[in-house]
Image 1 (cartoon, one colour):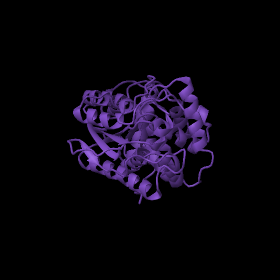
Image 2: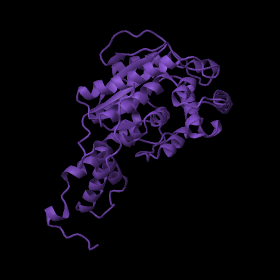
Image 3: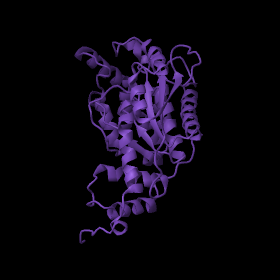
Image 4: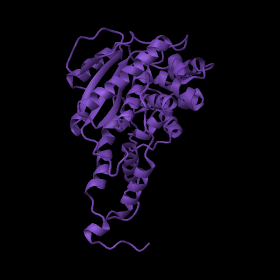
Length: 344
């Protein structure tokens, strides 16, 4: 079911580090950007790595049965309304995508409504929202497989269309509750540590949300696929497949916020090498996102207290990723430029 993913190439990593040290700049002076360039070389298996252009954003949209537990003040119909907004080009993600020249594809993997055909919309509906994760498994095993395969298919299609960098996006009211449950499950953190305020909730609703997450994660299965079925969302499974699909094609995947972080934990459990191909676009204001990134060993490029989702943080980080790789292609070495290097 899952495609084979190659680990980062040790020889390409070593070559990229050595190349960085030969460039006309003090060693290490580009900080984290040097780490990004080396990481992408290892993922691609070649130094310098290919330029990650153009980019494609995929926004996976789905609803969640746990919405019935009152974990958010937003009505569920906002999911379908925001899908329409994405398709009309009116969301923040659209504005940021236009800024960086990224395409936007919306994938319906579980919106609780029938969506009419529209340019930019891909139909992969697995169900009309998940079941309530606080009362039983959110998905069946068959639905998990279908959602993973949908994500893999979208990644493959976008790469076939010319994308050389994939960016994760999401939309789904109550999806931060499912994300917190997944992060608890895969990191071992307590629900209170990783459950945030989502799109904005008061103290009373937050305490209730924590209790819902704690109840849902009190007794979980051991197998990653079963954990995903128990407390995940259709978009989490699809994004995990999207990550694995991109990694299998050696195309870098820029992760967005807490939903992507939760999905990346799933991808790491199912295909550990897939994380070698990921870059953490930003650190969300959601506490669970930091826990997920720490567990994955990923360092975020941007920290602007964002908590919107949609792929916005990944889009903001994309120019930094491009800049990191461009240095490898265009900056002269000490030898080629005739510049004296600092004595070792």
